[in-house]
Length: 366
Image (tube, rainbow, N blue to C red; front, side, top):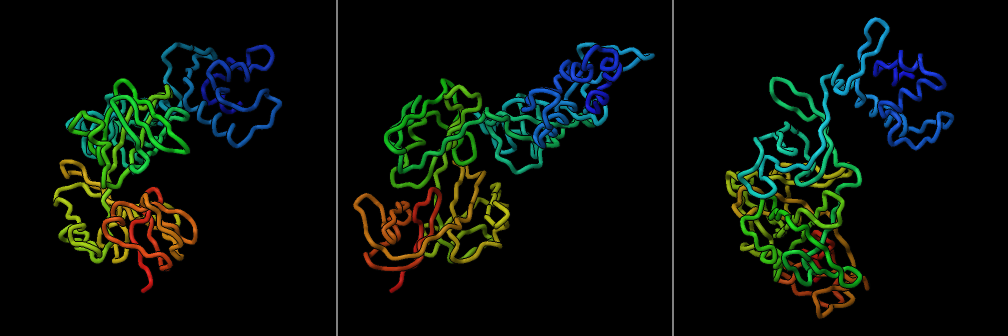
């Protein structure tokens, strides 16, 4: 009853025969997506949240002298009382890049949803995803209050470099409990290390020979074909030192593995704590950290992530195809590990894992 009354439909509900409030709720879709089948069913917490959402998105009707005037263009309840509106669409750009070209990027601090810019202060990676956003429009600026992925409309698939068998313009073949194929949309975008790819040759970006990395495919319309290809070519650094002022990560094994970030590059560094992944400053990194780094083609954007997983044990076997057995459990070696380490059977130590669980660095006993 409260939800119906807030939408301005009390007169409609009171004057209707039978269960007038239920009829009024149905007329403005307050009952959409509820699990309850009748008004006699108990209201779950989920249903209560959905009722509130549907009420806020319902059209508000004005009452004139105990009569209701309903048109097809009533403002929603949240628009009427809080100047909040809703938009659904695909995120076409963030402040670093557009889906199809870097030049189509949004203004700093904004994302683009279906051609409109919205100020967005969140850290979620939304590029290419189909989203629902609630926003206010003040002083000619649309400010997103919250943005979340649209339920059941974004499907992602991660494929690691060492599992890719072949690729062409419309298909990627990879190993995952046998040979599998991922089909690409007729028109798709390629994002290389955070920025729209300069070249249109997808096969060239998927050539991970002697390189570490992975790709993430995104289907944002539920048709089973992938609309966005995120290519992540990863370079690892096993830190011996950090030069925050010079923006340098210095590698413990080989100076050639060290990375210097462009002084003007947008750099995001992530570490993972008990409460989740969060942004940190470079001077918070320490010797002994394993860092996974991606840098865009033009070096304008970079990400670095601290790899926190490790395993301790004894090497019980060494395979011919780049795998190591630690306490009889198989681990694949990253390209970084292949270039920088030689392993001996029977040696014990700690092994640091990178993206996809590959061994990146090791400290073995003498």
